[in-house]
Image (cartoon, rainbow, N blue to C red; front, top):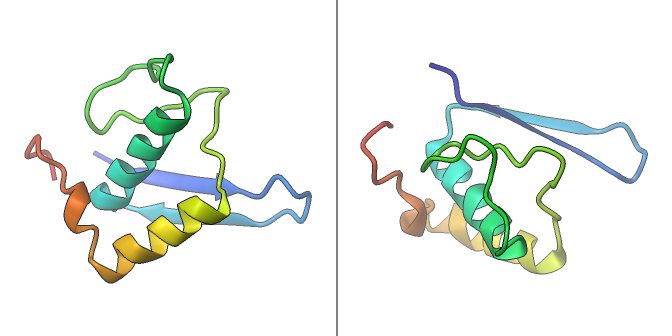
Length: 85
């Protein structure tokens, strides 16, 4: 089973970022999507099933600050509790 993710820049600079098998980062991004879209349900949703479809996570300064904090804390708040990973 794969857990491959990518992130594209919307600024038009053509940059793409890619990571594999990072369940805690997946959990972090899924929670950020839920915060930004409280009235939506992700497509095919289940705990790690973050598939935002046409509604991407918006990367803001605040999100980047929180992301940096989570990296430093080894994503302690974002363990995959379903035991899949």
